[in-house]
Amino acid sequence: MTHTDAGQWPNYTYVLPHIYTRARMRLVGLGGYVPKGIITNEFFAYIASRLGSPRTAEDLERVTGLETRHVRASTLKLCREMAGADAPGLVDDPTAPREESAIDMVEVAARRALASAGRDVSEIDTIIAASSSDNDAFPTIAGLLQLRLGCGTIRATTLKGACACQTEAFQVCSEILTANSAKLVLMVASEALLPNILHILDWKTSSLFGEGAIAYLLEQGDEDTYLINGSDARQAQSLFYQTALRKDSIEMAEVDMKILQLYKEGRGQELNQIFSQHLVGYTKMNGKEVYREAPRAMAECVDTLCRHAGLSPDELSHIVPHQANSRITRRLGELLINDYGWPQATMEKMADHYRYHGNLSNASIGMALVEMLRQGQLREGQWMALPAVGGGMNYGCWLLRFHGLKNQDALLNPATRTR
Image (cartoon, rainbow, N blue to C red; front, side, top):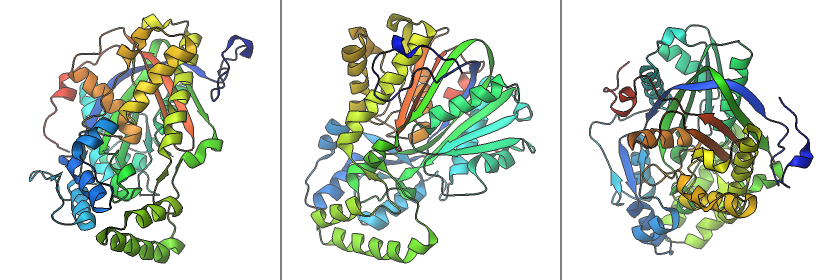
């Protein structure tokens, strides 16, 4: 860690700028995976309207910037069980696996990352995983992936947390590589929030999310990269989730029956009251507070790391934030401009690939990078900042220079899923 005189810094609300990591870490591989099922805005508009809050698909797209979400076949089945077999906006793919786990998704992403880097499984020294929706306490995602890939008894660690867990994982990887305890680290994230930590009928929240997995291959580099993370639990109630324990199971079953009954009767106000009061088992979100605080935390992280790197805003080519929603991405750019003196051109650097995937929590930044590569937006030598914020409230950023992938086609045009 490097420490700097705090007198140099703006009056940040969240970031402690002197606590950061400067390391030499390079991104050499990237792989992504999204399931084949799709949920459109028609589905959530149907739920909202049945609950007495009429919405159209266009209304939802205008407010969120989101058009479709990729989900697994099992999630589509759950949607029909919750909202009714005749609910619109649920698009099946007959070739999709009927049962698909978080490990299934992340294994595909990991193999694509290896292929994109031209590397072999045997070279992986460490696996670091991140997830906010994994429902396997142990073995963990990292441990199960280690087994699937056949890595042997290497270190395999999973970080559990909301959407900023991805930037925390970046920093953990950098510190592992700096300590020379590994030469090639596989970092992964796999998310299935809709069935695991949300209630589908809580449409104001559930309509924002999709499912998918991402994988990065990281090794020591020959130039500096910068990372920062922080936490402020004073904002925890803005986005809150509590895992249901065995002792909660009877209460949860009773609540679920009550939710379905209220939905069938169209009693939306009473249903919303349950979601706002019942903390165990379902995510609770205060959208106004999240919109106010999340962009500020990310803006501070980006500004701090660019100052540490001596990098001017003009030298930064891309800001690729956690894809929470399009309004938060725009607000992040506005704060950099209005509060920290960044140029108006900053808005053109904001990556927004939320429209077709939704919020993928810890897999969101990686999926945005995949889309940027698909569209030819990332080029050799460009600097990019990858900020995130999540429930807790946690926040962080990785500032790095992009150096391309050895076999980019393996990422953009992957072979069919194979083991």
